[in-house]
Image (tube, rainbow, N blue to C red; front, top):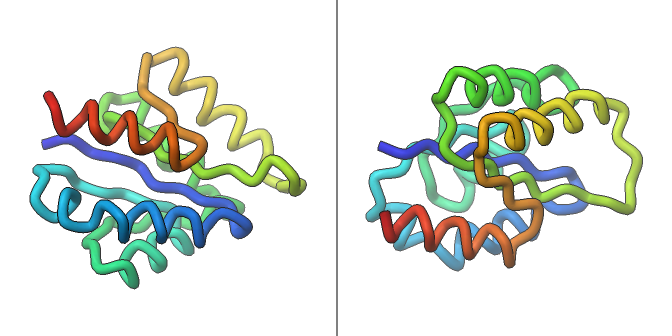
Length: 124
């Protein structure tokens, strides 16, 4: 079973929900587990998917997902970032992105890239 981490800044949560709803049938059919930061996880549940929630990003959720990624428990990260806003937990964000590079984990920071990564995971 593959595991995808879902994270979205407040300004991008609507984009995440749209992405999930556009792919809802595929997510439900695929053998994919979802883990998300707290608030994003609530939006994922409202979109009709089952998700394991960790803390919200500013409270350490980004770091929790990064730790799971470092030990091989995460296969891809869909992190819809808002590049036009400041985030007090920027060090955690940078650490998560760096660990994706260190461990060669696909990282989608926008819906277009998420579509491609998701299609690749489904093809495997």
